[in-house]
Length: 561
Image (cartoon, rainbow, N blue to C red; front, side, top):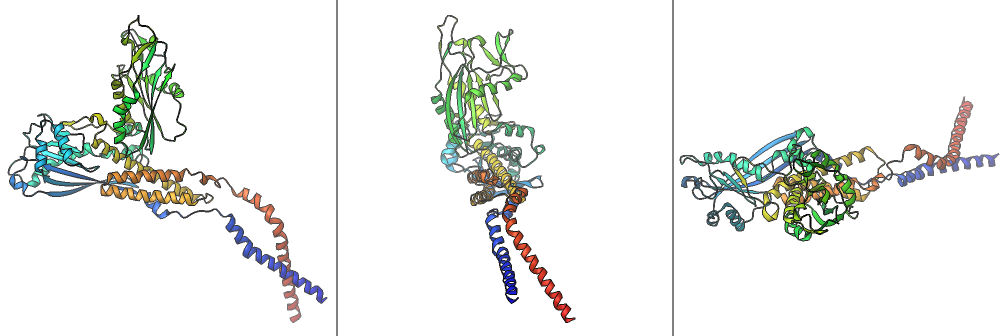
């Protein structure tokens, strides 16, 4: 009897020991080895980015040349003035514009530069003296009687970051404060032309704000331009649908070097560009043009232009080795049976450039060659394409695609052509402002969306690489916002590019999807066959031990009674 009791006691101790090992060691070990790994993320800093308050700071320098101020007024310069404007876009997005204006008189060397024969020469001479920082604006106030500008021109905007402003009539009795007050309106117009304006900045925030907050013109420019990217592929294609009639020759390499490369060199801070070209034979537009007897020519109406892209795009091919967006520029030479071919707009008028563009895709130009040879010419006829004419059209389309928005200056303003550079310095600054704000808006939206997703779905694995990318994006965003506030436009663009790259790498990381579709019923289907055979004996043993303990307590109570 004693041996039997000893055996039962040993069994109870064994059951309790096994249960203790399972509860104390087994369950925690299983929980730790099967939990979803989630690296630490800066959720508090990300939540701050959900409310975006941007400050854009512009340095303005107003330089008075000889003859614009009285000696008494000159004694009170140099001086500076700071003005701010605030715009609340929505509950989570706000803008503040800070203008730091410094007033001074021109130096002797600047006076010599302003004595040039033309405004263009004066602009070049002033640029040779000193180069203004990126994002800044310098306004030279010249006397009202100056012959540097034509009489009907009030403001001349050069190729750099310099503008010449004809002085309005000042009274000699005016104080310097009254003089500056009379200049404020014109200086503000110059800054709005050469730097950013509110409509363009709001359009750059389209990823965060509702479309109703954006003007139609700014939104049209924003939708036409291709989205910000670290790189772009530019492809020039010559379409020859009738090689039996036309033997086409184009110096695309020389044309790109002369007309396109200067623009791409200017845009190097924004993105990397690669350029290639190809010739496609027997490539047609896919739309049958109509013959117009009134002009004895074939025409393509604006309504049919949208049907041209898809058939041609199938022949273009793609660069599978690159994930960068592609901009296509096509030169189409009509075959002899459909020449000449002209493009008409919605008003049924011929387009002067005989070209059209598709937003965020590229452009197509029709190049007629029927007048270059007579009916007795021997086929195929050698045709040398005028690349200056072609590249002039493609350059204008490329500027639109890359977001160089068309400027509408106020009356009395003259904007100097950018010339061979393809882009004026102040046009580059306008693009940098828009791109920086667009990158910040896109990156902040991406990173906050990712944080909300990770917070709501606990099954998603957050590995160290994703955490590093998220932290890098947050740090770059904070730096970009700080540099914008300080007026360092070039650094702001650099940090905003880093932020958008890191945020997109984190958001589209494939490891986020590994355990996303692993519901609870599948977990039970896996774990029940594993744990049930082991748990049943342990649970039954524990129940038996509890039952026996209750019985012994009852028997002991009965004896005591």
